[in-house]
Amino acid sequence: MEHTGMDADVVVAGAGPTGLMLACELRLAGVDVVVAERLAGPTGESRAGGIHSRTLEVLDQRGILDRFLAEGELQPVGHFAGLYLEFDESESRHPYPLMILQSAIERLLEEWAAELGVRVLRSAGVSGLRQDEHGVTVELDRPRAGPATLRARYLVGCDGGRSTVRKLAGIDFPGTEATMTALIGDVELPELTEDYVWVRRTPAGDYSAIAFEPGWFRVITSEFDRVAGRDDAVTFEQLRASLVRVAGTDFGMRNPRWVSRFSDAARQAAEYRRGRVLLAGDAAHIHFPAGGQGLNMGVQDAVNLGWKLASVVRGRAPQSLLDTYHAERHPVAARVLHNTRAQSALVRPGPQTDALREVFGSLMVSDDVNRYLRHLLNALDIRYPVDGDHPLEGRRVPDADLKTAEGVIGVHELLHAGRPVLLDLHGSPEVAAVAGGWAGRVDLVEARGEDDHWTVPVIGEVAAPAALLIRPDGHVAWAADEGGAGGGDALRTALTTWCGPAAHG
Image 1 (cartoon, rainbow, N blue to C red):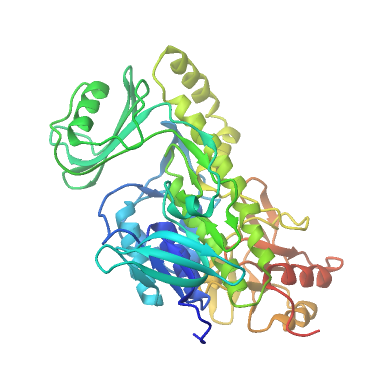
Image 2: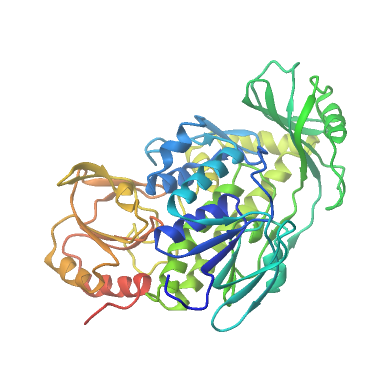
């Protein structure tokens, strides 16, 4: 890196899934990044337990999905507040959720980060920050080595729900307070005969137990007449007592590896960017972890932000591009907070909720209702506010089969390098001419589609486009059918908006 008086282009606070994914995205784009993590090493705690379709697609777009599939287990069904959902194989190559523990996800992402040259500083928590028009000075608390300071162009807080970065930046975190308490732990349950106990409601609350390796379970209990303090101690005996109250037995619970607590508090950062400080993952939003949406949303935050931040850092796009991060991702998190509040209400004990669940369950046999609810979880329906009226614009690009000089490949394979892709399916001279202004920044790919129609969640089949501009995060910035009027001007505008000004002309 040229000498700029900076220790890094970007400092990422937090080495969880969001922070590691963001760091990898930045390195793919040639950005020098340092991850500062307050913990001395990986926790090994199970925590989140699944990856949904859109996140599986994101990993596939980067060519690393096989690593995760090798360690997880695909589940053909899901649930909304414990009510079963069905998935549609026509919507994605990866329609089913993958059961895989957060500890494994973090290990695999850290291995990829090391391959890409990401620097990870452990036992280094952010303790202070000062930003100016040129960059951010980040103060680190390092118990083993003494305080340190890093100077970077940008700082991204991926440091969890109690984010120090968010607090130091003075970003508000409004929302709703907790109305219940849930306990979670990795334990042995020698007397439990089932491998999977999904959300099981009882008059005292609900519980679940999911086997993640022989003899070991991730146990969760929820009690709705108890609200614990945020800083109250959590013990194994509390988890055992809670399981007895809710399930009527502790199933011989023993040998805890880890115990923690969460609630249905739901909060969202009022702004995802303040100057040169940004937020992603739990630092930007917390909620009741119903449906396993939090980790997935954080990884998708990272993939939305990474290429934009890299473009700005490398001087290819104005800082205003970063404003689209909040504009696109803030509504997504608001929707998740909304649906997890609904799920929290649907799992409460009592005859009124029993009746509500019965009515709700009867509605879920409708394909439209089932589709709506599964899209809340798998995020395949998200459409960002991109200019244009083509049905593909703003949506994630389907992984359609393409014929290329190298053989048949899927669209997502074109995104392995994390660069914008201008896909020309009809050999248009106009597309090639416009693309010349962004040579070296945008990959121009000529191919032929295998199918006349592409399947798109929510809207069904659409005619295969003649050409489309795909952002590095897999969302379509521009699309045109054969003979589309003004296609060159619209393409030029889209390239300028998302990839910065042309190099010439």
